[in-house]
Length: 86
Image (tube, rainbow, N blue to C red; front, side):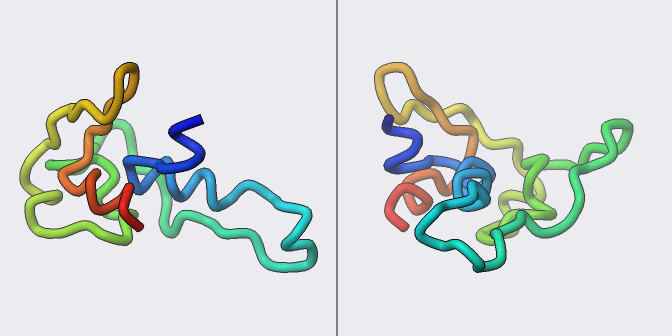
């Protein structure tokens, strides 16, 4: 339930925003911009950074550590706290 209430990674947040909802009938569905990376040429740093709406320089150069978000939950995002706070 925590993931739905407060996603801690921009990719998870994008996936949840793309779920069709009855209260938004007739509205365009949200889509994560861009294409997934070629698996033979995964970008440096965070693999999601080319498609991430909050990517910063650190995302392009450093692989994020897995941060503990809850008892059975983690996030591999440099800015997971900001993502939860949105």
